[in-house]
Length: 125
Image (tube, rainbow, N blue to C red; front, top):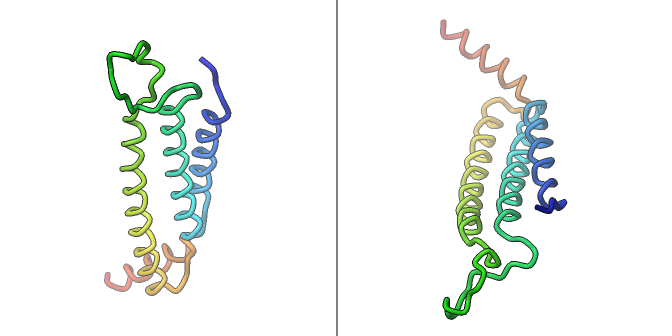
């Protein structure tokens, strides 16, 4: 089994993005890092589905196929198309929620929003 940079890079990118989300104080940075994390997952699965030297899964006559391991697996590609659509939807929801938070709190900093939300909550008690 050969390990290529295409196998390691998405994993490193995923964990860098994960660390960035945990340590980020800015909502916009968090949204961008979520997008980068989704992209790393998609890159990883597409790397699994497509290897050097494998043929596309388009077969005219199955009787001529001698080695089924030399044919690329189409399942990861199909799943990643679905993941791309879900990623777009998640990004749209994140941006919509960001818009609502900025209109209410007039900031994009997590800590400031949390403090203002706590002050709003304590007014009703």
